[in-house]
Image (cartoon, rainbow, N blue to C red):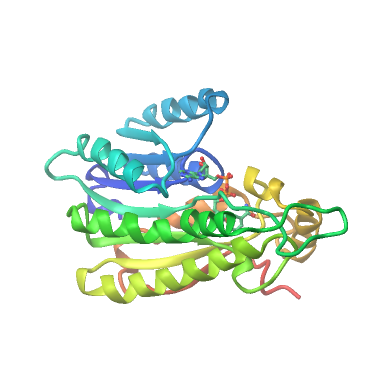
Amino acid sequence: MAALSAGTRWVVILGASSGFGAAAARAFAAAGHPIFGVHLDRRGAMPAVEALVAELRGTGVRVHFHNGNAADDEERGRALAGFRAQLDPDDEVGVLLHSLAFGTLRPMFPTPDNQAVLGRKHLEMTLDVMATSLVYWSQDLVAGGQLGRGGRVYAMTSSGSLAAWPQYGAISAAKCALESYVRQLAIELAPRGITANAILAGVTRTPALEKIPGADEIARRALERNPHGRLTTPDDVAHCLVALASAGTAWMTGNVLRIDGGESVSG
Ligand SMILES: NC(=O)c1ccc[n+]([C@@H]2O[C@H](COP(=O)([O-])OP(=O)(O)OC[C@H]3O[C@@H](n4cnc5c(N)ncnc54)[C@H](O)[C@@H]3O)[C@@H](O)[C@H]2O)c1
């Protein structure tokens, strides 16, 4: 994508303040792209977000961050209005990255320690944030004319779309839906010259992973399998995303792409 004048091709990152989203913001900013980041953070976390924004601006690119629920229709409207106000006439969106982590980790059935079980509100919220919000953001950016020919949509999935883990049921369902939406975007956006791919990262130490019950065991097993002898990092994924966003990947769409250092193919 660098050949296509990075300075006018914004990278829109849903979930920009942490983990893969923050690493992608750093990597795309370093490659010269302006960054529009959406995140959901409480006041206590804002100093770290402000430091990230300052760091990104330090690379010389334009940066616009919006703190609010990316899955809320009115909030999305406000966020997009603020973003569009930043755009110069030649600006467009080169990449939309969906990297939201906000799921319920309740079991479906009562456990011996009597944990609260998954209800409709939790299930719907998880699906909305971690999957369906991708559709609405894509629709709005296409309808608004910002996301067009040469555009790239990436959505962070996980091996939860294939496997079941205790308390991960709602997020697993969201990952299946997310991958399905990506396939649908791929076929419906192909005539517009926009690609869509899901990114399946290896197990990575981020705040989202730490919240999953048994995170240490998940990380230990991944480390054991990974032929590189270490876990995936957010930077590993971010650097691949920058490379994938080049003009040469226009025919690559509708995939689930593994970026895991070989973790998943190792026995
Ligand atoms: N960490 C892993 O091992 C791993 C592996 C594979 C896939 N993933 C996926 O990668 C994605 C990002 O995860 P992460 O590990 O970087 O998480 P993270 O907790 O580090 O970051 C999550 C980001 O989402 C934002 N966010 C959460 N809910 C939001 C909402 N409603 N509106 C706006 N912003 C919101 C947060 O502010 C934050 O910026 C998730 O979809 C996750 O399932 C993670």
